Length: 148
Image (tube, rainbow, N blue to C red; front, side, top):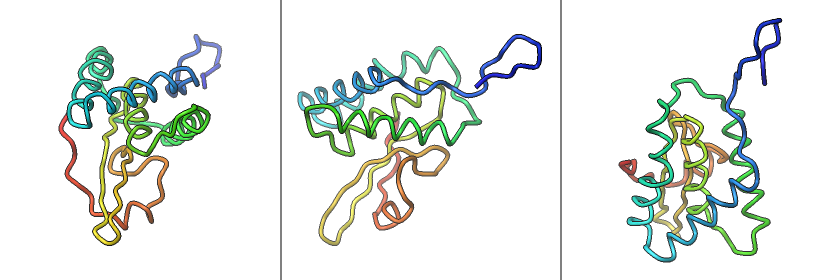
């Protein structure tokens, strides 16, 4: 989306990730989780993939919620097309990386339900879940934010 008032066009909203970028992040997260487990994979991924881009740009205080939702939809669509089953943790880590690379201050969140044990991972931007309903998140006991 650009402004065209006769002046040079300027970018208003960050670009959406294309399917190849989504696939790269999803597969990378999947391999790291299989090889190293969650704790170490999360640290490695943020140190090498996310932080390298974060250092080059300050995280935006203002963000476009439509762009975040569309990025979440794109990650979910690409995850459905890949020949492996990608669960919520892989999708949430990939979405977190995609949003942070675009300067959005996102955070990976984890929640558990003590009744009929279930766990779920999602991404929040300014305390609001992206690509999740409040009903799903509301039924979970939310764990503390994972330090970056």
